[in-house]
Length: 472
Ligand SMILES: [Zn+2]
Image (cartoon, rainbow, N blue to C red):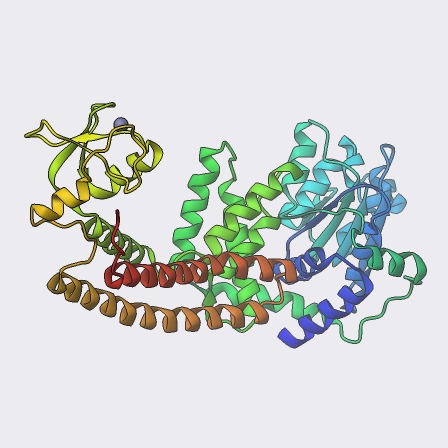
């Protein structure tokens, strides 16, 4: 089944450029028994795509219709049966119409008027058709709907919109070479080398019923629901339930043992209401799909602390506080004082027991020649040097070495985690290449953190071992 789906996906991708998401989603919708909506400007091959999706099914019955505001129930559900009418029974001859179709394509679906909407909603939702007094079980798997625009504000049309779990905003082909292919190739007569059978479509939903959900996937769904609520997006419980079902089918079709985080990317095609929500949604899902796993945060924090403390120790504490005579600012640390002096080369300083003034720079910049503060400290037996005492240095070097070991082990784990992610992504036929690239790039924030930590550790080591040249 996986290889069949993969072949179909690849052949459809050859036929339709830049429609990876729509194609994978349509196949998934077919085997999950969900409906698919294509929204976008006219001339984006929405109808062609929907028709070729139907062509990918062997032995099914199809029903195509282009709706207008004036479409009547007869055109969609079948003409009234005259013989029944003669015996005062209201009944339609449904053969060959929507109530007997396995797969249907309804173009301009939001043109549906009130005379067909109720029956249409019941078919989409309950797979039932009320034919006069009889209630028919409808053999429908998937309706592909297409529309140039979102439905107008109208309760019934909103309800119809809500029935479509998969939604795609279909844009014009972007890439120029794909555009050239599109306008020069003949698009007719697509015949895939393999086809899905009606049995294929039936069995996946049942087979996937026991599919386990990874614990972190459930956590992620709860977190996502919270996030949506915070931003005012309310998703119905029914929709969440359907989404989970689709994730199960998607994993089952790949022969997975459970639903893993990377599957969460599929939510980008099931959660938006307005196209402008898409970018934010995708960003959110990328974050969620790669979060968890190895946590570098704690090591990062520990390393930050070690680095900061090494920097601090190397910052020579002055034997006495030094005050700038001109600014009256007091300094306790050598680096601070030196920084001040470099910005204000003509300032001079005084020690607490005064009254003598000192200068810091070796070059005489002040009009008076003042004794040098560095020499004064040296004469006090407290020379200014940023070399760490040996014991302290050994202590730090010990810590640095320990960190080197920790980072080394973390890096091995990280490489394994990444390799397993790459494998999962490559096996996942439901994701587009762009999804794979973006997910990996998101994951690589960890790789970049690891590289940053390695640089910081080197830097820490340098601080510890380096001996400052005489600093005056
Ligand atoms: Zn000053």
